[in-house]
Image (cartoon, rainbow over all chains, first blue to last red; front, side):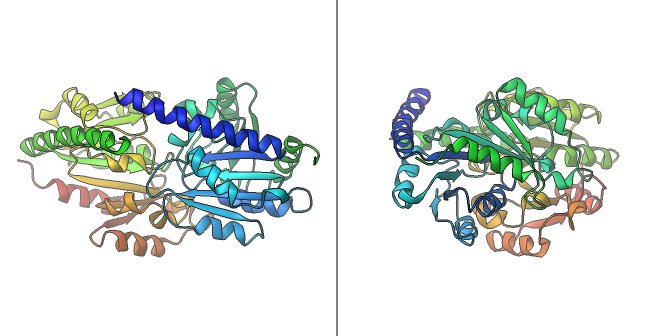
Length: 217
Length: 217
């Protein structure tokens, strides 16, 4: 009973996700779904990415949080439009929530929409939102065992951002091990080691994001 | 429909949790349910706590992970008994899983059972396991906005361990702010600032744990 209900919820979600994907394709918008543990640095990466790419790519943001619009406020300080979804306790975003939020964004003037999912390395992974690519952020402070302990999440990631490399030396974290383990789960994954605090490694990520978006239509 | 099904699942869980709680009370076992984001340092805190208290308290462990028994292996290296529950993708432990795991522990020779929940700051919070107290671990690397962003989880915590204080100075984290925000959500919360890496702050936590357990019956 539980499983069949869950399947029905997923089916409804998948339909909404397909509609979102069709909308993004038609508008030539690249949509990224960012997933991570709480506090891995998603919002800081995003703020810096918006500023670093402000002359090349117009980015809009959808923020998912259980509570508060703190993250949307942080994004708006960069000048980018941001819509906050408060999930009222739910542990992931759904495609329907994203459809509603997209309607509030100025999509005619956007090249990229980044969805910052609820801070949770497990549940968001099961819900397609219609994204063009999925980005998993892993902070060095979380430890290098996360790909093997959360294989479902990493297997679906097209991109892994290893963040907080400024803490290497203060934490036990083997970058090469994470690269190896993530590639076992998805041989095509693109991995960038960055510090959203110091900016190290971010230019390569910016260039890759621009290449994913392709030329403006 | 979805809500009523979810409620029924919770009711079944609450019944099993009540049975677990009765078992622990009868055996005078203190049971802690540890909840946190992935990589906050639960297993390291636990390993050090077992070693630090080895002459005062006999601790057994139930480990919850989506995949792998890496954490149970780490705990067993301390000499303590540890049972691994692999949830096969589920984002939280249930009281029934705990009931089954408890049967595999040598409960006659234990004073304390620590349940290390799946690394997830959201979902485990909704499932009572029959614990005597709930411990939320927050690493300084995760940022000091977590109590306000995850209020449901922090409101149910009797104890908050702020871990990785050795990283203060390398990360933006205001310990006093977290203490204030956690106390707004639960005025009776006990908060310890510790480093499982250096050992700083752990003795106060050890003493408090012993005081919670009370004298051996």
